[in-house]
Length: 213
Image 1: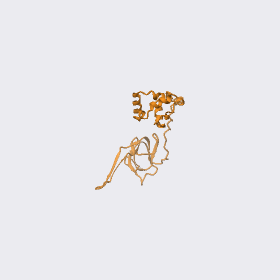
Image 2: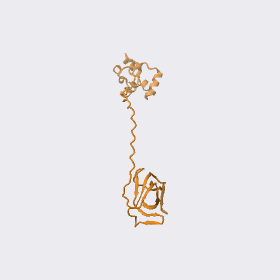
Image 3: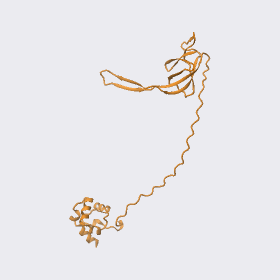
Image 4: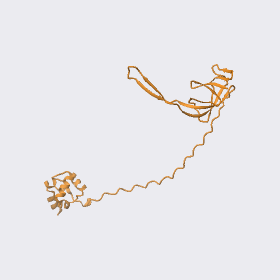
């Protein structure tokens, strides 16, 4: 026996054990699905045509798989215009294997596939112990002279708070250090701290020698 069914706006001629691919049906793999829109039934010369469907008839199939069809490109263009549109589409499809053709008296009952046992969640690895509090960052090396013992370098003529800070950051904290500057050190510090010529011009070394006494 064969039947002609309608689903998804299309007609299909089917027989038992046929596999057909139709537009997506909302069902899980293994579920049975009944097609109630049977347009025609036939067996040899005996043909029954529905008006529009055969009352009480149905085709029962089992969902084999869910998937998608090939991509279709839709391209629109208007002549003598910059209008262009390109879209792609993949139709959702369902593959069904026909199990039975019921000629009359279908009761509408179909079987549902047994629910698959939920996968057991993999045992969580033991949580790693929380990282210990980060050790304090190593403190910067203390300057040659502790801040409490450092000389007030702003007593030098031409040395303001900004220049004094630069000198301290460079490790110069006392008058004795400045008094002992060599010509090479003078050139190095003037280059490094961007006050070229100031040490000699303002007489820092002579002042530092007096203040260091």
